[in-house]
Each structure stands twice: as structure tokens, then as C-alpha cells.
Image (cartoon, rainbow, N blue to C red; front, side, top):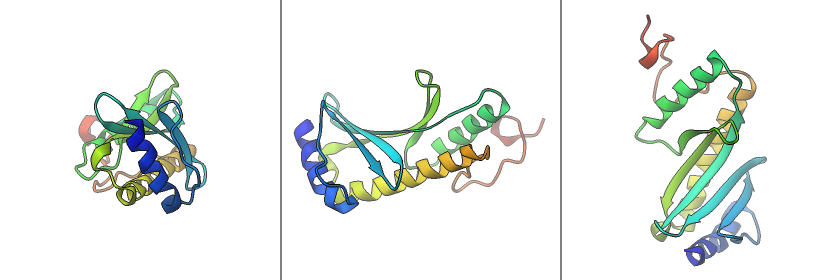
Length: 151
């Protein structure tokens, strides 16, 4: 599986302006679009490329719940890029996705990485301002209850 990832990274590098991308211990960490760190890891058993990025630590309280609610809404969209999850290990919101590596082209992957890193940046910026990031394709819920219903 790392051979496929090596080949993909070799073709991807020039498309995203990073030279000498390579796999080390079945992973690759890249910095894209400024300061967005994206971890790539080949899942040897399943044939997937796992793409992940840490968005931000979240403070306890209502704001954290609101971020989780927005992330769940974003996860429910059909056209989503990435899946939001919460890592207890690092106490942070993360965005990840699994891509079938055998059908992944370097051009398609470059487009995916651009959309993925843009989403990470949007959420990082909103969280740094204590805002709730907009969820594409959905209007603001308006209410504070689950599913946007008012109590």
C-alpha cells in the first residue's frame, strides 16, 4: 500500500507546489495553504488513504456543544468534504476522510486537498473568533435545542 501512496505523492507534489513528498513509516505530514497541517496515512489492510487534520482544541461549556452541533450538521450533508470527529486523546476537533487509494488520481487528490484544507481553515478561523462556522447548504438553526428546535 505504501508503494501506491509513494507514487501518488510523487505525482501530487508538483501539483501543490511541494517537492520531495514521500512516505515515512506509512505516513506523510504536509503543510498546505499556509499553516494547515494534513496527515496522510495508508491503511494497508483496507486499501484506503486516511487524510486528517486537527482543527482546534475546544473550551468546555456551551460553545463546545454548539461546535459539536454544527459539526454534526456538516457531517449529515451529502456533498461533504471530510468528516468531523472529536479526539479525546488531544482534546480537539478534527477533520478526516478515507479515500480509496487505488482509484485516486493525483489531480483529483489535489482538488480534494484544496477543498479539505479550505474547510479546515474556515473552521479554525471561526473557532479562533469564538464563532460557529457556517455549514454549507444549511441555514442557521436559530434555536438552541437539538435539531434546531426551540424549547
